[in-house]
Length: 333
Image (cartoon, rainbow, N blue to C red; front, side, top):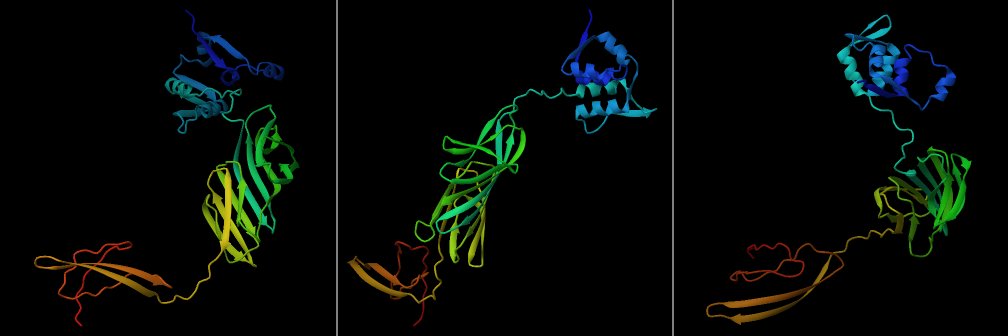
């Protein structure tokens, strides 16, 4: 019974290129074809029955690259050819990986991997420049990439420094792309914000991306800025302006909140007022007193209070709101 060996044209070219010349027209015509030859003929072609296999150096390097092996097999070189033992050659062939399917469908049509929002706040609006890194994976198709919500005023948008085709639907401004690969989309837009009156807050709807960076120039000083979605945030003040930089966690919203810093005032000594109520009961051999003390503390906080009781009395317990640890000491008058 004859055994047959089927190999893709990629493997066949490695082998048959040693003995045959293929014309350019034939290469173009047979680019996606397959070659089937009897196993016995294939063994004769490579002289597999011999103890040694002789391959041109270029062919050996291509075979080695297709295996992905880091450590090459044991071989010797003679006259520009690589000499392998039959055992090493069979190991090399067994390690060869099938060529990637050029028609394999990608898991996603596109990916937005990075977004950088740079804004400058004015009295009534904040202008932004958004820079997006988009990877188009689907071939031979026009894709609509949603980038910004329709509630922002879009001024200009470019794809790879060229004017981009934009459509607005389903609540988003969408860029149309057709070429596969990485693209850089730059959009200029503005959003309403109020500086003079509250609420001192600005919300920006964004696309969820693995990497999101925000930088904001605010014409205010002596303010505290909060961004709940920020994993890292820093702010500096220069020329009566506050510059904020933040790394945002993946999400669909950025909320910027600010308020004036509270003035640091000199600490005033605390004043304490108290009301004391005693409940006294007489037992057989002792006098029991339960005292309720209500404190009113003004101006500043206090860390502790001290109560004085007669030395011939024993303290059984101290309870109440704000009471943590308590201790009892004896002091001579």
